[in-house]
Image 1 (cartoon, rainbow, N blue to C red):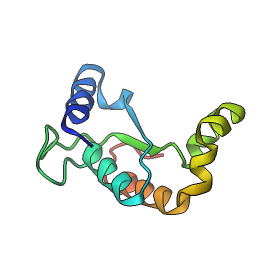
Image 2 (image 1 turned 60 degrees about the horizontal axis):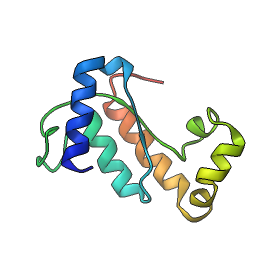
Image 3 (image 1 turned 135 degrees about the vertical axis):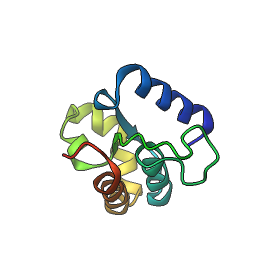
Image 4 (image 1 turned 180 degrees about the vertical axis):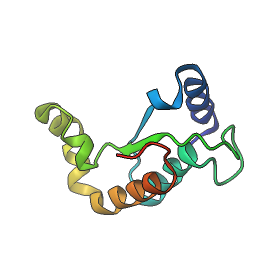
Length: 109
């Protein structure tokens, strides 16, 4: 997650409160999804950005997680995410993000 996005997430959290923020990821690999999820929950693990040492504990999901897919209009989801579902390792991505969410988020599903 780049430094500008980290700052925007931090600013929105301060403005609206962590209880009102949900971060939705769209990264293509489980490892990068996990790093982004960890950044918005436990803080930037690289200690390079505005969220270094800042534990926001936000809710974080990946667009390909079943719980998010169920909330979307099926036709729109298929049009926008259908190809991603076919070519990416959805299980690995979902597992990585849900593991980080369960470990660090202050909000439990």
